[in-house]
Length: 282
Image: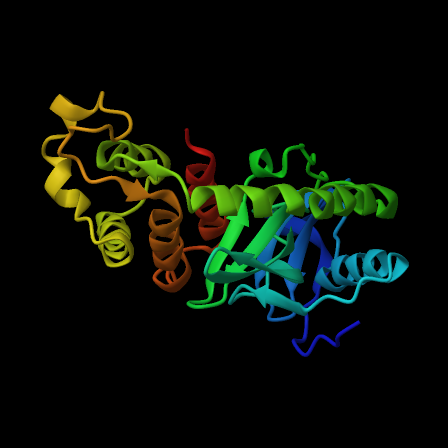
């Protein structure tokens, strides 16, 4: 296994008390989750089981070692306050027509309950380092999330990782198919408006990046959306520019990877999953 060079911050459980009538009274049913930096991440029930970031990483690495898998790349991304971790594991390199991509999985953990122990397919486009987080629909099978309030169950974790690794073949097929599929500008606009409830600034960045990747300015079509929204795919005789789904998807992931530094990483993670649904749009 490759060595992790990033130090993983820890969190601690601390008793909670409230002040009443000039005296402190301990809350027997609650505890605080506090980071190394002294920040209070959350107030939780005593039943809540704190799972350290490093325990997740050790468990994942144990699964990989059991299967004698040596990842091409491993990297934990840590939020600024240390409360969230996204452990990215790249397992294989694939060629999506002329694009080199890496595929693997991402597992998440948090100390503030903003996200549980979730496992998703993960990828990266080599040319521009665009991150790709794949919704479970793309795996061809569904991997249930582990509950963040229960003790880490290694057997269940192993099963989920097996499911995602097994689904990577399906994801590779979906990516290659996306390079051959097109979508009308109106369908793409509707997809963006429906799936991305984000600031106008980020939405404009998404439209701009799509124009960079595809050469199509969606904003020119947006004004005509209502009268043309029933147009599905481009057919002979229609003066509508078809948009390649793979190129449009890369435009979206570019915006979400490189222009979301001020957005909570959990939110970006969820937006990336939504973006992947474009790949399987009919």
